[in-house]
Length: 187
Image (cartoon, rainbow, N blue to C red; front, side, top):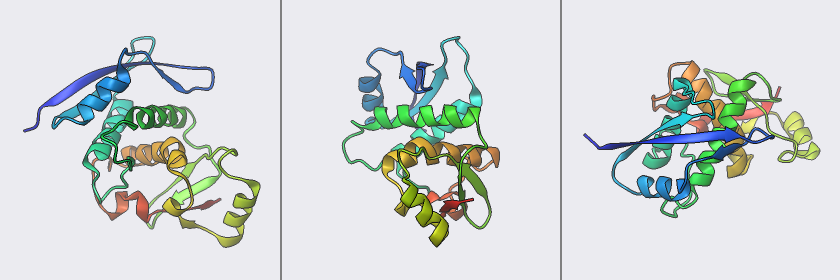
């Protein structure tokens, strides 16, 4: 059995609903823990002192996938830098997740495989009108080939993990839960 470190992450949101981490030395602590051979369990606490187990479960599965780099699940952390960039990736994922939890059915893109579909909102600064026309004209294409790592972490992965949670497949590792097998297209 592996030792697990629990880290209480205090956060607030700015006017654009982006996460502001209030813990001192957050970057150092998260990087240090991710580089150790122990597990990491995050407990997110908002400015009112409220903890949401659904959010924690999703974030902790994301962290686990980043640490394990399991080939049966799209690895959301592609850097080979001893987790130096991980605090930024984690903040972006949490920001995206909190946005998706507030408005889960918005978005112009359908992400799907043979068994499930979920919607994703990708801001216009990431998808030009030309790219939207390409999606309409050519039809769906494999998701991973279409967007940068930032778009996937901030917009697609939060909706993906929420979809897995809602279907009871959050910790399952299979072709059905591998984001590389999904396609994306405008609906």
